[in-house]
Image (cartoon, rainbow, N blue to C red; front, side, top):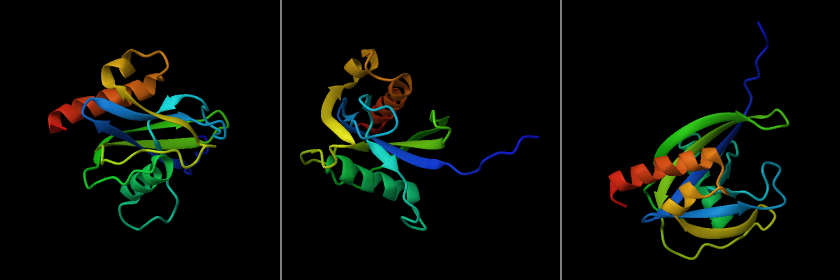
Length: 150
């Protein structure tokens, strides 16, 4: 039996929707994992954020830090996935959906975020610029958004 590592990074992303439009970031040159791609905003949990609601607090903090928005009370779990980055670090990725809370998104960390932009869902799922896993997350987000009537 091989020895397993039980340590991993916990990453949280939030698909922010304004109707069928989604807020995406272009990952900046200072990030170690996939710089330059279009992605759903989010980031790593910092322990201990809180004994309770670790994922939700991470989602709110990361959206505030990355795009300057204060999420409202609606934060809906969508899915989770695990992957290993090329350096061998394991990552648990958790994805939420939230409605656009209003305000003007802005880049506060240019080393991490190169651009912020809104995109219609139909454009995103057809775009070769979107990674397959991000396309899958956005598909789940859009289906849930429609069910919720956002």
